[in-house]
Amino acid sequence: MPWDNDDKRNFLFFLNDIHPVCVDDGLMGVLAAVSSWDTVAGIVNTARQKNAVARSVKKAQLYFHVPFCERICTFCNCAKYLLQRPSDIDEYIKALTRQMMLMAPVLKGMDTDSIFFGGGTPSILDEQQMTRVLDGIDNSFPAVDRKIFIEIHPSSWTESKLALLSGRGLYRLSVGVQSLDGKVLERVSRTQTRKKTLWCLSSARKVGVPHVNVDFIAGLPGQTVKGLMKDIKVVIEEGANIIDVQPYSGPSLKALCGPKETVPAFIKRRDAMMKTVTQVLHETGFRRKGIWESYSLHGEGDYGASYKEESYGRLEEAVAAFGPFARGQFPGAVFYRSGRLKAAAGLTEVSAVKLDPGYTLAHYALLAIIKDNGVDEQVFFKRFGVSLEGHCGEGLRYLQQSGLIIFSKGKWKFSGEWDLRRIREYFALSRVLFGEDLLLRLRIHFRKLYNPKRDYCGGNSLLKSYADNALMSVYYKMGC
Image (cartoon, rainbow, N blue to C red; front, side, top):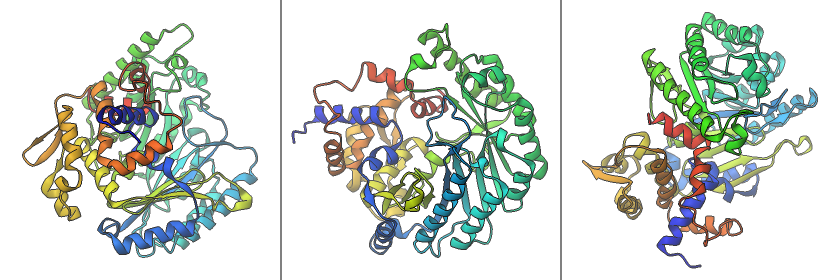
């Protein structure tokens, strides 16, 4: 098919509009084909024999997606189900156990001490159900010590659940607060009380949970700058040592506005909140590491990281994911996504795509330029045994010619100051590092959506990206 430089640039911006920032799920996930867990295991085993990247992976994070919710929040874009009957959870746990048994041989001998529960609403599980899941994990993936990371909804969190998980290694508790203002929460269909939310924080502090994370959203209907800042100060007083504030986003900017609010007024209000958040958190001793990490008190540890984004950028670790819609990957080997919950099928459905080692190295370079303040020639060679220049030099020079990166003191770095337009351009054009073969495969996949006669580089696509949660998070967390 025709493929000149202008067409390629246009297609890269098209990809950015389809899947901003989220590299693996956006670009590899769409190429995944219906497969089986046995096939996934075979791909990993073969890769570990044949390529150094896969062979170097010694650790696997265990991620469990609990998709059920008692009520659907209007702002949520996570994979979830509205719980219809309690027996659905029991069927889910049976299927989950089978999934773990199928993956256990693949991860044998690997470090699997970190367990992440995301959702949906993981805290919807009762004590017996939590115990069954944790016992299943111990049987399939033995470990000396456990570190449990779990996201909770205040309304479904109890003292007995806290005691159970604390006794089995609770390391990070992520509390979905969003706001402490009851009227604001009511507008987004969020059910919780201020009193219960603050109890979640204070009780975690009392039992000694090392990392207590609070999630806020800036720009919710009826929310004010003053109100959000007050909420943040309150949760810090109650023991939160990690704060994550995401900009309110959704399918359209207009849908995010209040009843009498214009789009410019909403943007101005949300921008003021995000910029003030950075100032307030810095004044209270919170610091940020990297672009996807939450603000943690004095920058402590690496556990301000967001699982869904940060984990996929660590080539040292695999992500073994279980449950409906869960995304897993083994660097240099495979990316996969579990299917929908179908009790009769035992949750064995899975889609997978092989990860070429070259793609994995390009992904590392893409993220390192901004996350680690540059990708180092010598470090790259020492780590992977291949030359950065030989692997993606042509693509790096393309970004250099576009004015997005520079080469200085052995490192390729982002050039100049960050702003929203340049961040968008970087994430669009940097996909050229993945190579011609992958880009052509993606173009074939999107042949019905991509219109080569349309200009995706500017115009309304920037406004679309502006409302996107992931891209806005990068923009604000770079301190812009």
